[in-house]
Length: 309
Image (tube, rainbow, N blue to C red; front, top):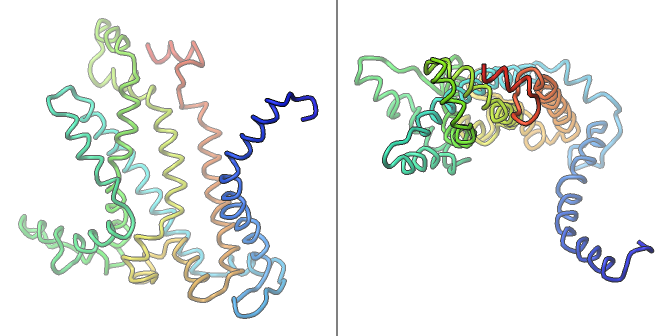
């Protein structure tokens, strides 16, 4: 700082001034809550009385809690079902939206629009669609002679209902895939056609490998998002309940119950750290395996040859 010129010091001060709102926001709304939740995870605090130190009791209690395992199972099952399905449907939709047809921009906008609506509004729409008595879906099934299930009232069907709901935002994934598709050099397809490669082979050897960076990004985001399912579960289950037989008890919903219904803040903080660490481990597993399946065009000449083969 002492060696800087007067104008450089002025620029430096201006730089700090411009980023200070972000620093204040980060310290207030991110850093402080993270540190506070870590401290609270080793305490008992019911809001009414001062926090008291209990060591690792909240963590040992977690592993004896049946609802902890139940909520973890619901969340992981939902992740295993919704993430692959949304990736596959997003990719299929992007392939259709990449066709050079008249008015295709209208359809791109149309399929993306549902992604703009989120939260309570979408949950209320799906409450009507999945209603067993007068819902849109069961009425449609009855027209073709199928008796629809009790979607949100049946423990066997409530989780598939959430998976179907998650496909509401598949247009967002499709738009990202579409961006990846339009970045693939056209000359690769032309060379493959000259070599006699069919549609499926061009997709398998060119399109899919060159879309792996987008696939990697969406997979990471899917893992993180699946551990944050709350709003739709809160609304659909009836203001924070777990649904029939707790079949809709997502991890974040159970955390909310402990924090804001039981006022057991220390236990909820321990849950937050366990859930955060688990999602971090899953994300790291995906991240560390990217060298085996994600292709970055500018990196490896040998990989490029493999793709073009």
